Length: 585
Image 1 (cartoon, rainbow, N blue to C red):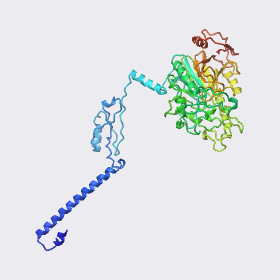
Image 2 (cartoon, rainbow, N blue to C red; image 1 turned 90 degrees about the vertical axis):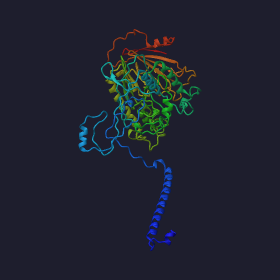
Image 3 (cartoon, rainbow, N blue to C red; image 1 turned 90 degrees about the horizontal axis):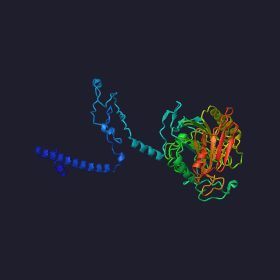
């Protein structure tokens, strides 16, 4: 300051003047320091407000009590889970002598002694008693589960006979490869409800796009199958069949649905094979648009689909489609899955036990008959025309290459035949039913002796794009054959009728009893095209006494009489083993 220059402190002035100068300088310095501090504080606060929240200083961590407190009684029975509210506790670390003395004292309610740690302990909440839902709440929750198509709870109980049994189909634990569970036998499933017991059969059902349209197999690209296009049927065949299934299910309530393959046209799941079975997701939308949202409604929601793969699930004319995802969807938990798909392997078996009879199902992969094509063919899973010579592989599960493809399917078929014979040999069920994609016209040299030796009662198939039931007039004799390839995923072999008076599109409704099976062919117009009643076929070499006429009318006769119709034809099939069957057409 100018005054200090004129009057330096160190000059020879009176002491009183020097003291005043020193005090003035101190006051000026203090004021300047306060002004500077306020200005800096204002700038800092403005800058702090502009800093993003994530960068701001975090509040200090909460102190954790070394022993968790029990929630208050009011929170225990709340409808919604309440956040834990902990009373503030002193943070003083107890001394060793205090610890032993405190631990020796009677424990207070909700406190558990534990080793003191310098690190904050994670909060461990005591299990809360759950309220038992009232009957009206149970029924409401169960109805919601049915609306969502959820699988019933997997309870295990004891069925008459003493063996443990599940009240719903229970898939085994998933494996990495789709082939790891080949030959698996599911735990027995017991259905204790009163009859009559129904199951549905459908095949070749998955169309293309959203909404799904049938793959056009009747175009000029396929001269052998060319025919006229029927508007209103050929463009929405899958929806017509699904509508009749829904209508029928609301009355008959099927226990489960048998799916004979060719789930998605043209070439299965639009993905590359080789993914683990536990990583299946609906990336393509096919599961939701072509399966889950099509087959739903009263009587269909929550009903399991038990199935096999068809040649188009492998790719149609190549083998690298997402066929392993059609297996892995068995364990899919994320939406759109509703937990009803059950295809745990390429071949597998399941036993269903009813109150007074049982059924053994054998699911077989017969796609070997579409894998033995010569070089240059335009069709076939192992086609060299559509499978690239290099890079066509499904990894460790196989096939590993185009050259390996025919042998891979041939070996698969040989393993299945050994497995099937071993399984049939020990079967003690009332009914033996084989489910596969190709009708036994393919591989008759294998099917005919096996059916006679082990008494196969029914073979359920698809592949041929129409509906038919064969019983007693084939090389299989009294073994019935179902062909249900008219699910609507691909155009039918013949010309359909606008009103559904045909056997081109449809599904099968089978009624199961101890004495007979009734197979009803339902068309896409809801008409019963035929009713065939099948009796059990005994094993070869088993002595069977003379068959007497049934004491009660056959299921077929009673069904048609109830509908006010008389059968137009009746064929009695007399087999060498003494079995007898009736067919009404």
